[in-house]
Length: 258
Image (cartoon, rainbow, N blue to C red):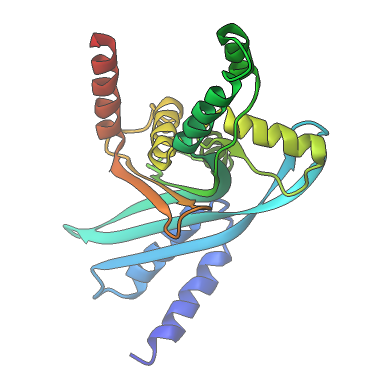
């Protein structure tokens, strides 16, 4: 209908006049207004995405820098036996760095064989334990979307931290040489596959948000932009918090038994 854009604009103007602070709550407010104004509508969805500024310090020189990342929110409203039900989500997408474990293992083995040509076994082993070996890097893009139940608050800053901590190393816009060295070494000491990043995020979510209801919906995604392949690596997990807890408990039991 030609009047739809006008009606939607009116709802947006009405919603942003309020004092709502959380982006997901603003989405929920817009959904509520839409369903009130359009009595015939059975369902309404609103999605928002915004740049979000964070302050970071470089790892060694502690230089401060402002960096931008993405923060997202969704809200879905539907009618259930005459009542309006609202479900809202908040999320973040963060860029980090990952290092390929396979390539590192390969370069370590080839270096070891070369070292053994002129060093004894003990000295070679000391070198292997001391020196950082090369691998190929990826720019990783981690994403978390998590449902925000009523009477609960989830901060976007906390999701950003979880995503960053789940990769080989965080990246920083402003780095001096000593900072670059620290980032590269940290990343190569912590190589991981794309699915490892997803597992890390899931574990941290369970630890930090174990108080949320078990039916809380969680989406975790990681895309690694490959440097030596034409394709990218992708991993994703969509489940409720209760399902994730059961899976993690199952994996821990297997590890303990083995």
